[in-house]
Image (cartoon, rainbow, N blue to C red):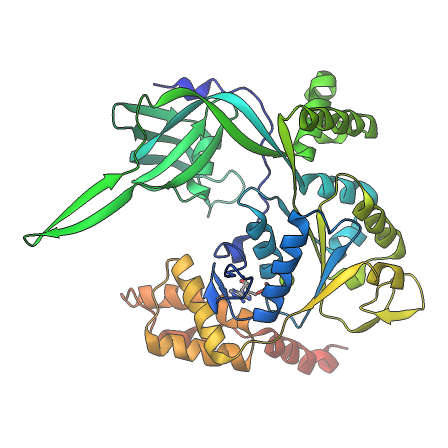
Length: 451
Ligand SMILES: Nc1ncnc2c1ncn2[C@@H]1O[C@H](COP(=O)(O)OP(=O)(O)O)[C@@H](O)[C@H]1O
Ligand SMILES: [Mg+2]
């Protein structure tokens, strides 16, 4: 049954790559906004998490208009992680877009890049009647192929899955795009999912609840919460797309020829954006949609120049504005393009708009906890002694270094026929891979020789 193939071209929310931070689910706060030591994938850093909890509340109450957030702290103290936590805290469908100061400054079209990033960071939640396949995943198989450019990466080409409700069962073959989403969402047997056939989007709704009961020594597994009725149905669905997605969609509709010529998103003009804004405002007025301000995260913000800062100031004032979160690890620095030294290399009128949050270095226990969470997320088993060793390393060198050694140490362990990292594997990994400080010292030592 290949009904899923009849997908209409509708824009999808673009997923920003957040590979190192997939374990983060929110800010891990209790009802009073107090940070729980380890929660939502976050560890420690209580002060910053609680501060961002207040920001989240202000966003919900519309009190962040005209303002932004600045996170300051040494490298590897979770600045990016916390910005993602803020977005997740605001809702599962809150857009998160990350840019680096260097990337912005290196762009030949800075304001276009920023404008696009801003619009990617603003979601529109739309309600619509859609054809949906919904049920428990009973069977799921991927047909994989090599990545066209990178032979070491395998990408799913197609997937075959069986969805079941209490009354129905349907087996579907889905295309590459949906297969990729299934993979990215980590969909497994026993998950309850919905596939929006019109938009080609996959939603993970949860796991079939399994109640485990002991009865006469036999374990009975009962599943509840499985949907009733047919797998394929018309349903009111809520989905979130970004303003940028709408821009490209409408630009494509208006200029099919330029799209054929391979111009694509470049055909988004200010005129198109104006029309999209007007349309969205209309949808909101009619109760068909709501705005979902997301997080626009700009790392290494001390690299930005006055032009960019004034763009961002203006952006904060707009009716449709994302929450702008800047991050830096610099104290005093020259404002780019001037001789003026300023706090964090930022002009005062920008600083005046920012709520400043700081992150502090982690202690060994916190590093250990973060390593544990990442190991689990990456499907790596680590013995207690190896974890201790990695935590020490994280404290002496850096958290990043310790985290980066997880996969090599696991590879080494498996070569030795072990499924769990031992302290010896960590030693082997340390011998082979050095941390940044060491690699810098190493080349510095040889500098004079090559001059
Ligand atoms: N408090 C925390 N809890 C869980 N994971 C964290 C925490 N802080 C940092 N991490 C993880 O450690 C790594 C480095 O943190 P990152 O956010 O990149 O630091 P920074 O942006 O300050 O350089 C990332 O993988 C991040 O997800
Ligand atoms: Mg960072």
